[in-house]
Length: 101
Image (cartoon, rainbow, N blue to C red; front, top):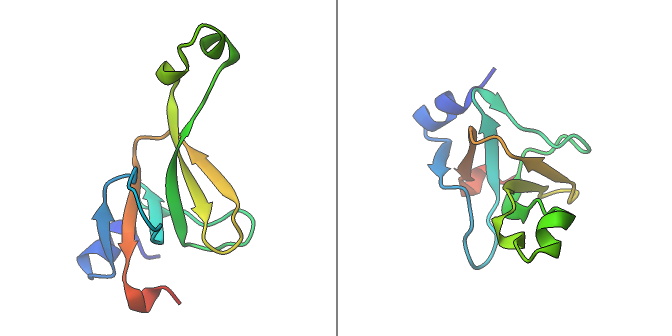
């Protein structure tokens, strides 16, 4: 089993900050601890990431929507299925050109 640490050590992946970037989305691989994340729908392993606000109606009603908790959304590069993670141990890794398939 290939772990995230081994992919980085072998030069197949480079850690990146959780994206909040601007511009064209680039595919990333993701892991929580030593477990690589795969799409639960198509089993794809490439994603684009995005910040997702977890809004609550009470906070919105009082104009405190900005204070709601955020999650990281991983959008499957193949099928578009959205996976949400509040786990702060989520790690994203750049994908090298030859690994994009």
